[in-house]
Each structure stands twice: as C-alpha cells, then as structure tokens.
Length: 192
Image (cartoon, rainbow, N blue to C red):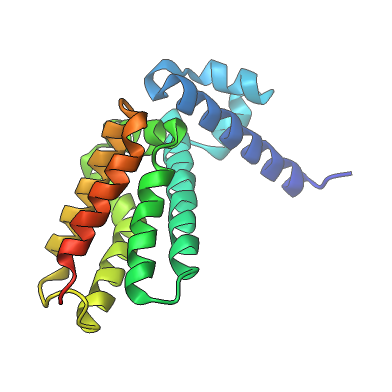
C-alpha cells in the first residue's frame, strides 16, 4: 500500500499530466479547473493542495516543457565532439523540438500570454537562453566566432529561433527550408 507521501506525489503527477494534455490541446484560456480535476479524477481540494491556482499549475507545466526541450537540446549537443558541431546541432534540435504543436502551444504561445513577457523571459533565461549564451561564450573563447558581447547575440539568436518555431506552426512543411536557413545564419557567425 502506498504511503501518504506517495499518494500525494501520484496525485501531483496526474494533475500535471492531465493539465498538460488539456493545455496543449485546448489552450490555457479554454481549460477550466473543473475540467482538469475531472480528467485527473481528483477533487478541487486536491488540486489546491498542490497548486494555488490554475496559473501556478500552468507555470509548473511550462517549466517541465522547457526542461524537456532543454534536455533534448543538451543531449543532441553533447553527442558531438566538435564545439561548432555541438552548437549547431543544439540549435537545430531546439528548432525541431519546438515544432511539436503541444510544445509550441505551451511554451511559445500560452507561456508569454499567461505569465506575461517578463516572467516567461526569466524562465527562458534560466534554461535555454543561459545554455545558448554559454555555448556562444565558449565559441568566442575558442576563436570560432568573432569577439563580441554575448548577451545581444544570444538574444538575437533565441528570438530568431523562437519566431521560426512559431512560424512553423502554420507552415510545418517548411521545416527543412527553415533548418537550412538556420544553418546558413549560424555559419555566417563563424570566423575564417
């Protein structure tokens, strides 16, 4: 028999799983708490035991989605031995991962709309943007990219990739062309 702590954790996992599914398929605004608790098979009291509001629940779902995308990008980049190949493979992995409609909806569409640009940006900075900036700093240190301030370059690249991912939601057939364009853009940064 499961302990109380295990039961609480199981309830929390079910709430996150079901709310993620609903947020991804219907969008944050179209999902009510009653629908979430019904899908999860719990009471509103159980939901409020774990999350103070629907927004807090969404924030945790968004953080999980961001962590999954970051893990995919990191695993792809880490599988390469060459610093430049690692960087470009990571960028391509981000673009590919964010073409998933569920990820687009939660991470790129509803994330900034629900939490506000500043909070969404802070969450992004803590994950993907920080890794991108670190990779760029390493490339500059290695002489593979010209010396320049890292922050503006990281923000420009992050913005371009996020925008491309959003655009691909309406034009998924353009993934190959977009990946090619991203490769050309990244190659233009390389010195020599």
